[in-house]
Image (cartoon, rainbow, N blue to C red; front, side):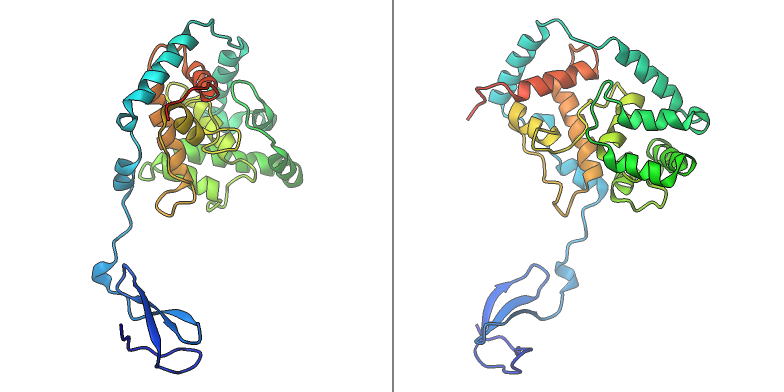
Amino acid sequence: MPVLAMCPLCTDDEDIEFLEDLPDGRRRVRHRCGYEWTHGSVDVTKVRAPYSFDELKSRFPKPGDVDPKWVRRADELKAAFLRRKPDFDPGVAAYWATYQQIFSADGLWSCDPQALKDFANSEVGARPGNMSVFNTAWNTMGTDVAAAYTRNTIDYLLRGPEDIPLEDRLQHLLSGTKPFSMTGFKEALLTRVLCVVHPERFLSILKYTTDAGGKREIARMVYGLEFPEPESVNWTLGRLILWSNDVLHALAGKGFANQQHAASFLWWAKDQPGGPT
């Protein structure tokens, strides 16, 4: 197909090969010298506006998308799990109640800074993993400065501007776009704060995706449900973290003593053999 173009390297308009039409109205072309480039101008009538928040959320996988054979297997696993006596650490409820007060609008600004550092390094109720980046930053900044950054980070997550969804406030802190974001206080710790403050909603599964298994892997292995990759341009990790939590919460359903119990079921079910093919 002839293309009215000239090679930017050779300044030659002969033997220009058409490769493909692009969605925005431009074309990929190649000269006989081997150089490839995009030719033409963007046709604004063909460029789709980015998906809105609500559009993206509506496109996220839903509990109803799970194949019935996966639902049956998950129900069988759940019944087997619930026949077991729950193995709860009796100190978790009291510990989380303490931090609900610490993270409250009043408590956050008056608590002992050590309580904030201790929270980041505690495994009670949910294990955040290696906190060396946070601890190094805390020690380098000094207690007063580090505590101020940590307080502002938590306050923005929990009580930021109402016109900014929680999903996007979470993303702002993950990406470090807010100048008060505390170094090392990222996905695992931010999710753990949400688990403590809103235990009726958030499962104590602190990562969206990991080699050992996060929300994305659990959805696939327990329900045969494929969540988006975090690198996808249409999503943000903050949205994926919250929306995946809500789907897994709904799929796990009722019958558990609390969300920590439900999360324990999901962790256990992930490793059970015999999933549908």
